[in-house]
Amino acid sequence: MNGGPSGFHNAPVTKAFVITSGLFTVFFGIQGRSSKLGLSYQDIFEKFRIWKLILSTFAFSSTPEMMFGLYLLYYFRVFERQIGSNKYAVFILFSGAISLVLEVIQLALLKDTTANLLTSGPYGLIFASFIPFYLDIPVSTRFRVFGVKFTDKSFIYLAGVQLLLSSWKRSIIPGFCGIIAGSLYRMNILGIRKAKFPEFVTSFFSRLSLPSFSSSPPPAPSRNIVGTIAPNTGRRVERPQPAPMASSVEPSEEAIATLVSMGFDRNAARQALVHARNDVNAATNILLEAQSH
Image 1 (cartoon, one colour):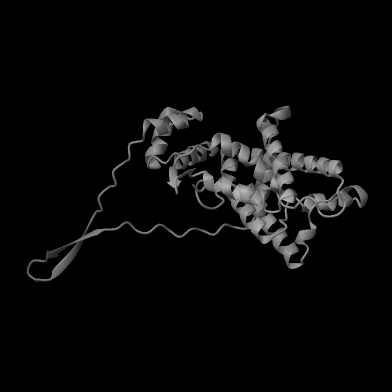
Image 2 (image 1 turned 180 degrees about the vertical axis):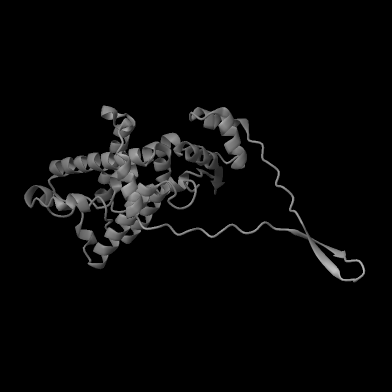
C-alpha cells in the first residue's frame, strides 16, 4: 500500500509542504533549537511570540518525529490527487488553522508555564488526513502475524500511533486537535469542502518545489532467442521471438462492488481492476488519476 504512483506526480502542494517541513526541521535541528519550537502558555499569552505559531506548524521537534511525519505526509498525497491541488491547499490551511486554534485554547485552559507543553510539527494536517484515510481508502489485503489480524492499512495506523505517542502529552493534544479539524472538514462546515484556491496558487507551488528525480526507464521486455542454422554457411544464427503476452486477470465482483460503492462507474472500475491485476488500491489510484485530468 503506497498511496498510488511513486513520487509527487499530480501532488505539487504536498511536495512543497514536505520539502518545506523537512528543511525547517533540519535547519533548526542543526542550530539545536528544534526542542524549543513547541508552544507553551508563556510564549503565547505572556511573551506574545506569535512567530512560534507559524514555525510550530512546519518544523518537527526531533528526527524520529520528522521521519514518521514526512512518511505520512508523503502517503497522504493521494488525497491531493483525489480532490485536486486547489482544494487540497484549502484542506491544509483549514486543518492547520483549526488545529492551531484548538491548541491555543488548550494552552489557555491548562495554563502550564513550566515547559513547552505542545510539540511542534504539522500534526494538524497529518491527523486530519486520517479522517478521509479511514473513511475513503478501502482495505485490499488482510493477513495474520502470530495469530493477530492485520490489513494493508495497519502500517499507516501504526505510523500514526507512533507519531501520536512520540512525545506523550505534548504530541497527543496536537494529534487530537488535528482529528477534530479533519472531522469538521468532513462535515463540510460553512461549505469548506467546496472552497478552493485560484489556479495560480498551485502553479506557484509547482514552480517553487524542487524537481522530482526522474525514475529510471522500464527494462526492455525479455525476448526468447531461438537458434537456427543459416543455409550454405553452417553458422548458427540467433533469431528473437516475441515474449508471450501476459494473461489478463479477471476482477472479482467484490472488488468491483467496492469501487462502485466509492462512486466510480462500474465499467471504469472493471477496466481499472484489469490494469491493476485486481488490486483495489491500485485501481482506486488509477481512477483518481483519470478524474484529475
